[in-house]
Image 1 (tube, rainbow, N blue to C red):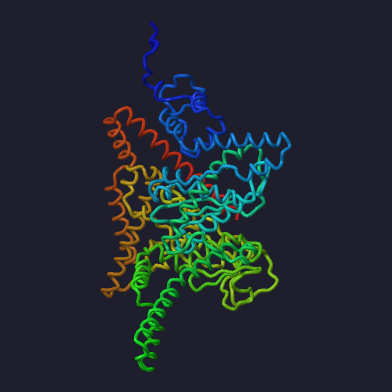
Image 2 (cartoon, rainbow, N blue to C red):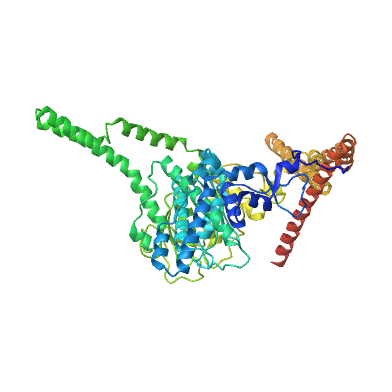
Amino acid sequence: MPKHYRPPGKKKEGNAAKYITRSKAIKYLQITLPVFRRLCILKGVFPREPKKKVEGNHKTYYHLKDIMFLMHEPLLEKFRDIRAYDKKVKKAVAKKNRDLADRLLTRKPTYTLDILIRERYPKFIDALRDLDDSLTMVHLFAALPSIERERIQVKRIHNCRRLSHEWQAYISRTHSLRKTFISVKGIYYQADVEGQKITWLTPHALQQVLTDDVDFNVMLTFLEFYETLLAFVNFKLYHSINVKYPPVLDPRLEALAADLYALYRYFSANSRVPAMESQAASLSGSEQAETGKGGTQTDETELRLAQLQHQLPANEPGTLMHLVDAAAREDDDNEETRECKTLFKNLKFFLSREVPRESLLFVIPAFGGAVSWEGDGAPFKEADDGITHQIVDRPTQGHIFLSREYVQPQWIYDCVNARIILPADDYLVGRVPPPHLSPFVDNEAEGYVPEYAETIKRLQAAARKELLPMPGVDKQDLDDPQNLLVEGIISRTEANEAAEKKLKMLVHEKRFHDELKMEQEGVQYSASVANKIMQSSVEVTEAREVSLPDFAQVTEDAASMSKVVMSRKKRRLYEAMQIGKERKRANVNILKERKRKTEAAN
């Protein structure tokens, strides 16, 4: 009898009962492959990798429970109704009955994905954690052209643009933006929304060229779900700050393609509405009280009441709670939010035509700055005397105002990442700006700190009035090189260099203390005294060198002792870790060599 023989009628067991191939799942659900793909994308069902593929390695497997989950989906019945309705329309068109076809198209069945959003994301925090891909996809389609052959309609592009602007307006209003980075792919942003780090990518404002190797049907299915998800998230976020959703924008600004500025005006108008309503409620209440008393109050009392009504916003409990909530919201802002809110405070920026306007209109207000641009609908003109910085990207300017600084757009993003106002001398027009460093890279963990990162670090310390080590002295130099070598943080050569540097520092420190002691005692400085101090310092150095152990021997002993007690699995893991550290050191050495060659060429 074969090993895997199953008698007829016996129930399947193991992987054969848990998993099902895609072709069998399509036959089981009685749908086509495009509908099956669409249903899996909307429901969040993805292929599985069983330990043993019963029907071969070249097939795609799904969990049987997921297929049963799809079988009872109401959306599946909707897809079947739409398919049957499309057949009716096609039949009417084939019979050249245009009236019937048009009448059928107006009554085509529709569906919504609201229930799917509630099923896949029971809590709001779950939706925020899964928002990265949604934002990237929506921002991508907001920049694409409309192409009928790929079923990319103008209505869908406008909807993506509206959702992306609503999201950016909320982030800018709540000062939740934390990091920005300009790359070849586009502009990366990272925001902190209710404790969740959300990172997304927006394409550059350039003409997008669509390729033929992309299946837009699959992408449009993902976009359909992401649009609904982002609309739900925007609705929840807008109501969390007491702003009505969807926003009603100024049609004049919408016609001028200033949607983001129109949303900012909508936010400011909605923030004044509760106070105005509370004043109206208090005025109406006081008028009713006055009419009820029948005019018994004197003119002096009426004047006093009117003064009190204008001094107090309202006497209603709801208004008082609104004021308390607003004050508590200000107090709940953490230190990072307050720092971002006041970075560009009291600064006014003007954007020239050649700079990325939408990105800067999003970033600058998110950090407390006022911004305008060249064109209709701008809040202030280029000749405004209050402008402190003008963002330009051209080597020459037609008219230069001496009361403002002309900087390149990179200065804004570097200031945002550093959280300080950087000196604008390196970013002036016509100069090659410093390297644009990524805030998503941990330089300390990578083992290589760029030179401009050290400069920014010292500027940050100076802004916070902190004290840093001397130039050329790192924090690791102050630690024990022996411990660093044993832990594998530095190599043997680096440990020897660190030990020599530490000895030199000890010599200079001993000499400085001796000279300071002699100066306090009133001893005059002479060559013999200097030689004596130098000799004592050399003796201290030799004593330190004698007391220092052999770092190479310590490292080898520690590695051999640790490997002896390790199991084979842990030993292989340890060797893989060492290989990773060696690769990191090799990359750091490559970067240092490039830096050395660049400095030699200059």
